[in-house]
Structures are given as structure tokens and as C-alpha cells.
Length: 391
Image (cartoon, rainbow, N blue to C red; front, top):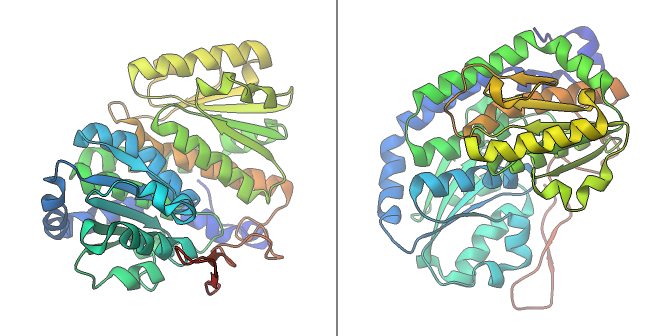
């Protein structure tokens, strides 16, 4: 099992390691929180979901935006309506384009702290462009004292859902916060899913407790380029996984992400003889054919040892190197992303330690910040900028 040793503390990795290891327990606590608040959640959502023309937008910045990219396709299918993922960074810079349709809108905001300037700016701009009466806010956040939670806690058109306190990560990279908010977004709309919670917790615990040496070996086998691929919701996870490695190694590792089909259309040029490609295999029998096609192609081009698969079904992993996470068969890809993410987090952490970086604070000079600073929020319709406070 991963243990927080003295050497880990000295390497500046104790918070990140703790926050990765605790996730199975945090998810169990999260499920209890959502179940306890189910009546309030349903009372808030029910009248909105009755509106045939309701527009649902999942938003956030950085890793929090990728939650929407993973959850939106799955929720569109389960709800039988369009669910979109649009980052706050896009909503803030182009509000009149993204809010062009005057429709009833549910803006679901994901944020670890809620203190990034774009978090509150996006919710304010939605109301400014569409009008207060057309907008409702579901805020999913980890920090009860954050600006986003504080601004929406007592608003009649808002519901704030707080994650377990341990999900409010202290480390630089989002780990517990990411998986908890993703899982919350799925459970809020899909309803109680005890099987998924137990299966995800068990699979993640197995990865954490029994795969440590395999992760270390894979890291030491990896070259200086790591590519993550996935289809559908797992494309969003591939994006998050690439960012996690980039963050934790302080930008010293070349990373890239794409979909299984999209990778051939130019981005494949990034690979060289030192590249490791990690492919998240879809649980959908049709979609997974495209995943296994690119796996076979890349193994022919690079060699088997350069292509790693992560799957929930041993038949989908192919004959080369790969992990099957047991007990996840039958879960859709958005739920699988919660468990698959634990692998990517552990890989990024070990790669960072291999390079001698400091995962809890990879940028001690402040060049990149845990909470974004220095963003100017420009008033809509004027040419004079106003400077937001650094957070």
C-alpha cells in the first residue's frame, strides 16, 4: 500500500499522496451527503427539469471544466435532453455568444475553492445577459468559505452543494476535489447508485493498495512524452490526466490528449520512440472498437511496451500491457472516469517524484498558482476594465 513515509514528506508530496489515497472513503461520505440532501436537491431540480426548453450548462475552470466534459455526454443520455459543457473561461470571455439563446438555464458550477475570478463572474454574467429570472444556479464546491458558495448560499435561484471537507484539497493539483465533484454531478441527476459507489470505492482501493509497484515501474519505463487517449466522456478524462501530469511535473514532461479517432488527424505527429501512450477503454461495446483499433495501430508503430490500456473488461484491453479494474463492468464511462482518474493521479505523482519535483507545490516561485490570480474581469458593454482581487 502507498504509505506517507518520511521521504515522501521530505519530497513535498504528503498532501497530494494523502488526498489520492483517501478518495474511496471520501466518495462514501459524499454519497451519504447527497442522500441526506436528496429532498432539497429534488425540490430544486424538479420544476426546472419539467421545462422542455431548459438549457443545462456544466461549467468550471481548468480541471473543474473537465468535469463537465466527462459528465455532459452521460447526463444527456440519462436525462434525454441536451446537456452542454462550457468552461467559465469561455463564458466570461464570450458571454453574449454562449448565452445567445434566451432560454431558461441551469448553470451547474463546479469549483474546488470558488475563488477563481471566473467562477463568480460566469454566474453574474449569465444573469446579466439572460436576466435574473431565466437563470438558476447549482453550485458544487469544496470550500464553504469560498466566494462562489458565499454569493449563492442564500439566493432563491441557487442551491449550493458542499463536498466532504477532506475533498477540499491542500495540494496544488486537484485530486479528491475532482473525483468528488464529478461523482456528485452524476449522482445529483442520476439518483442514488449504491452499486456504483461500492464498485468505484473497491476498484480504487485495489489500485491504491496493490498496484504501487506497477505504477512505479511504468513511470520508470516511460519516456519524456506521455499521451492520454479516450473516447466520449473519457476524452475529458484524457484531458484531465494530461493536465495532472503536466502540473505535477511542473511542465517538464511533454503531455497531450485526444480522442481515439481524433488522434490520427494530425496530433499523432507528437509521438516518437520515447512516447508512452495510455488509452482509457470505453465500456460501450461499439465505442470501444475505436479504442482498441488505435491501441493496435500504435502498438504496431511504437511497440507493445509503449502503449498501456486501462479498462473495466479484460476482453477490451487487447493482448499487450494493460490494467483491468475489477468490479466495474456495467458502469458507463462517466462513472468509470472516477476510478480511472486514480491511476492517472498516481502516475502523475510518481512521475513528479522521479523528476525530483515537489508535487504539493510544483511552482514555488508562484509562476503558476493553485488558485488563479491576476485575472481582469471586464464589465460587459464597457471598455474600462476592473481588476478582481487576487485570491
